Length: 279
Ligand code: SAM
Image (cartoon, rainbow, N blue to C red; front, top):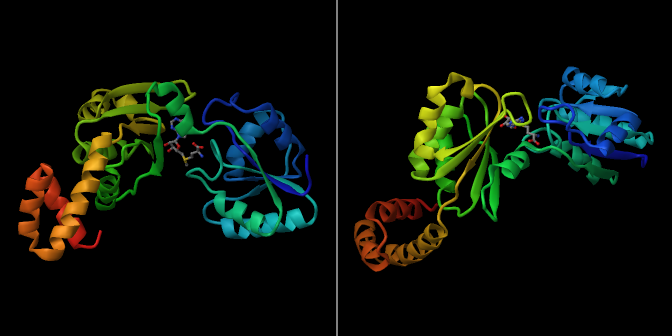
């Protein structure tokens, strides 16, 4: 083990056995483990017979905790960083601490392992060559919808994290914005009630409502991307509209753009409004 260094260590997302030999070795040998929730970390560490000095590093103290890491590293110590589940810094604290340590010239060593998004993708069986990891959508309805609108034309499989009390609202909003697409609901991965369910977005709310048990736990949602043609078409429509809007009213530009591109009037109108607002 190199000293001084910060090791960023991935830990299980449910099944405590999902930890690499290298991760265990690093956790056993580190002088200090910085954990998102020290009590939660103790469960994992005890299970694997790791005795460690723990400090806490979470969303609300990350700046101060990063300074503590610098002090430890300056004393020549090795530190392991873990979050509650999966890979630190992925929808979890860690990025700020890592940046602080790197900027101070210390070595940061990744120790890869579980990640809920990759776990879901590996078992979903979707032949998607590209995906976009989004993580958590905004909690508030209007901002969530705005974000979904921004993702609507991307021709990539979309990967979301979601909490149980928001999953139905999010899936309903996706159905409203994206329309006819498929979704894979990956729930409680690596745990007792692991479920991987594939359906149309329009069927997802009813699927949840049919069995309240499906609303419990943690979720990864994999949503089909826009057909490649949609993204290309929007690019073309935007180009046409931008030219027309420089010369005529919005109403006239929409009419001409529909004739020129053959796209749907509503889509062209919405796009014209966005361009008009500078978006
Ligand atoms: N750092 C983690 C990773 O590498 O995946 C993500 C942490 S984030 C705070 C927690 C979210 O990840 C959950 O709300 C859920 O969306 C997803 N997640 C974590 N564990 C999961 C599991 N076992 N099954 C399904 N989703 C999970």
